Amino acid sequence: MREQPGPSFPPVAQAAHSVEDVPVFCHDYGHSWESTKQPDVKHCSLCGMNGYCPGCTPTPPANAKPFSCTRHAAQAESAVQHG
Image (cartoon, helix red, strand yellow):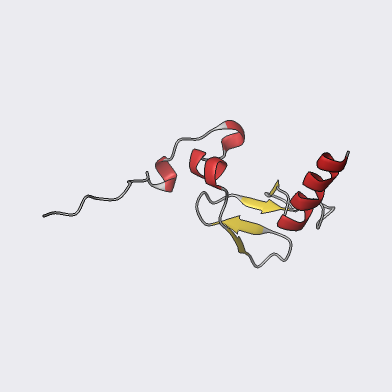
């Protein structure tokens, strides 16, 4: 008996894009952030986007889009729940 193949995901370069030029996969499941040589910049290994957390880095680095790190996302969510 042959095994059924698992789900097939499109290559990142051919992935469908949604709002703000974020691939649907990253939009639905989240980015896979990795450290870079630039201390305040993370790089998504799935879509190639560079990002930074405005709560940790008040001055935006060049060529990086804002995202909330785990700590600042939790603070924002807590403020909404208690606000």
